[in-house]
Length: 420
Image 1 (cartoon, rainbow, N blue to C red):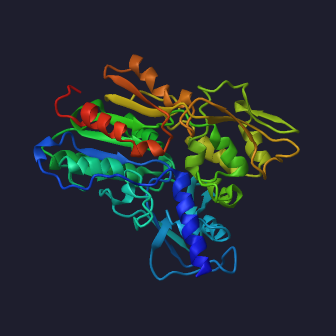
Image 2 (image 1 turned 90 degrees about the vertical axis):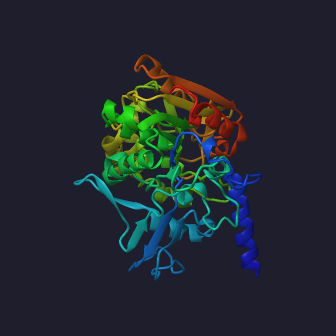
Image 3 (image 1 turned 90 degrees about the horizontal axis):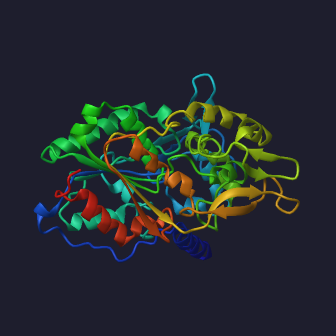
């Protein structure tokens, strides 16, 4: 019984720290179908999709780690997997192995990962699929839309994906996403689709649109509505590689999840873009050396993860030029929160196995303001409108639960009365 109490407390604290407590949602059934606007496809960000895992391992990192499961289980987000000690098992199950010949990654031997419920919203509404812990992601927005007459799986749909990877390994995903958009258009009276993205979902959508003809985009896409898009990366990725990231939960030891985070191509993809950061700006300071944007290879080598530099080479040009998408764009983001932009290691904060002193700048707490605003340069690159809307005080993930954001999307983007 005592262990069970610890698990429950840890679960609750993680949810609070993630900013995902889900309250005050509208659950009324739709009354007037005619009130719905454009159909929607939701594209989540890093950590925003359910992931299922199945184990048949010959070796495990600790004696108490499971080696075999009869069926798939929820591997993300499973809060009980993130408690102390057990988190080591999770990190070893979720990490990837990089092949520098094929330039691709694979799951750990004996681990199978699957992304459930393609096309439905279930995999992107809740971080905790049991809903018992009330941890929500796109759920507040979807509930609001359903109350207006939208139908899950028909007029509002989800595009979950393996967020560990970048688009260079996502050709099947991009093919399926193309078909999902076309099917959603066809099932909703040949009305153009709005892509609503969060965080890394924005760059994923940009990559897709950059590889579509203008004729295709004119036919199928009404607008791209990006929430918290890290268009040119985020400085906090440097800390992730060095000392790990606690997933926004102070009960999580960053060093425990670091081995997995270092193997994700998506981490490399979100490394700050060379063209938007000063090449001589010191981002990481240690007693032995200062690291600038020009020192990426040395940084990865000194961390003992040269494969991460190879991943950066694989992903750096995917949207490096940040080419305009050729559709109407809404850049929606929070602001006014301290956001990591430089990290200092000293004798007390030893590099890299302790958390550094963090020097912060403007942003939404996760993504630096220069990255959130990079979309504004598209105003000179395309004829379609590019509209920015700032939601001051809103944090990178918590903004998805903001009722003002929901109403803005409904009134200005989804409405059938606008001229987009």
